[in-house]
Amino acid sequence: MFHIYQKKKNSDMNLLHLIGRERLERMHRRFYNLTGFTNGCKDLNGNIISLAGNGETLCMEMIRKTPLGLERCKKIVSDFSPDGVHPGGVPGTPQTPPSSIVKSPDKVPGTPPSSIAKSPDRVPCTHLPPIAKSPDKVPGTPRSFIVKCHAGMLDARIPILVDGTVAGFLLTGQVFETPPLQDECRSYARELGIDPDEYWEAARKVKIVPRERLEAAARLLDFMGNDMAEMASVNLRLQREVETRKTAIEKLRHAQADIRQKNVFLTTLVDTIPNPVFYKDRNCRFIGCNRAFENYVGKTREEITGRTVYDMMDHKAAEKYDDMDRALIASSGKQFFERQKVNHRGQTRDILYNKATFPDEQGQVGGIICVITDITESREKDRALAENEARFRTIVEQAIDAFYLCDSSGNFLMVNEKACQSLGYTRGELMTMQAHDVEVGFSQDDIRMVFKKFARGEAVSTLSGIHRRKDGTTFPVETGISSFIQNGEPVYLAIARDVTEKMRISKEREELIEKLQSALAEIKQLSGLIPICASCKSIRDDNGYWNRLEAYLQERSNAKFSHGICPTCMEKLYGDEDWYHENWYPEGNHGGNAKGNDDPNTEGNDDPNTEGNDDPNTEGTS
Image (cartoon, helix red, strand yellow):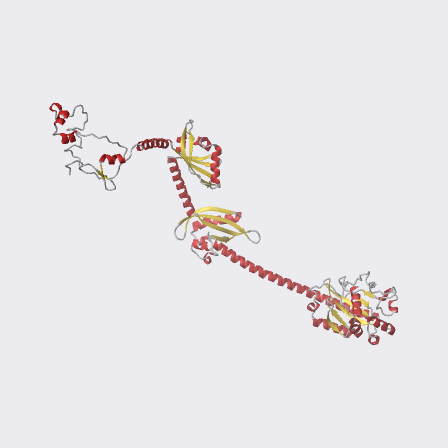
């Protein structure tokens, strides 16, 4: 009976692929022609992949068509392992079916007549040792099984082991060892739910074959299984080798693509570097460079590759470079050096060479890679910076203000000559001091607070402080402070100016201003063009009215007027009166001062306001 053996699938163990359908069918037909036994091959899923002859109707069309019959067929198969060892003990020992199938202690359900099931051999399984084809037959070659099924027929099942793994089964049999008994067949048919007459009719057509003949056929089938297994093993190894090579080729293809991609990336990367870069082999020949190096030497990459320095410059200069390259290859290290070089445009440039060796596949020195840096501009900037620094120091040293550079702790880092002169210390003495030793207008904590404000980004205006000289005297200063970073640390620059003279002048100015303000508080100031009558001396105000002179001035200033008459006017007004001459000019004194009159504004004085003077504001003027 052809049973189904369930086992975990192995994608490699496909007998149709390993052996081929045509070859399998040809081998099974030869076996059928030699033995007359129906035989076939099943895969691990129970599918018939090759068959020669016809299966018995009793088994294939009747028993296996019933649920109980199919279940018992599968149970027989599941009770045996593919290595030929019965799960219940030594090979060939029958196993008692599970209790769920047993209906009574003395009878196994579905077992043909009691004559078959009277002894422990009711499900016989004969183990036959394999017959080796050659003396070097490998132990463990698949073994054949002769199994008597629950319907009383004999089957042979030979597992095909390929590299120690079951790949399928060779099957033959479906014969009775002795003629079946009608009563037992009818009884079993009723148990399976099959028409007894049809069952008996089919049982009578099953071949009767002695066990010895079936065993001989099984041995022959075992030989055929060994050939199949060896053939499948060779093909499996070839198949796996092909797959391995395919995998290796695919990996190689991916690796080559990856290498090409990396080469493109590295070439792009090197070409992107602004510095000229070249690399040589261990024989000091150029094997590559970037675009910057092409521009540097004025040649294309194709013109450079494969050449030496002797092909690129004059022999004397090339000899120096070649000696250095060979020394580097011998020592396997790095080189740093500077040279002045005239480029292909005729310009003299300062060049820094940075060379190093790189290893080959064996870990030996494979060649040299060099990065060139044109430091001409950098050198010029350094020189300009040095000149600027020298100018700065000159300016600082000649400054009229004191310069102090200190760190965040207040330690002096630099002072100028003015600072030394104003404080009376030498430069060496000041460099050992701190800011609070000089500035006494602020405490040490106050100075630190100023530094903290700078650290927080707050603006600090000019500070007014007091500096103390070496002799203990002090003087006022105005100090401007700024902050910047030097060598990663904040430093503070203070520029202090002595404001002693400034404060003195400021004080004098304030006193003068105070005096002037006091004087201005007492007077009112007249300014601008004042229209005055040339005759009567009246003044015209802003509204067009004419005012007497004294009234106009008294209104617009703090001046007060007292009225009198000058000798000239008196003479003009009263010169014809006798009383005037009697009282003003006694004893005939004309042209002099009146009695007891000390007023200088009499006739004959120099007052410009008298007749005949040059004052344009008097009568008779032009």
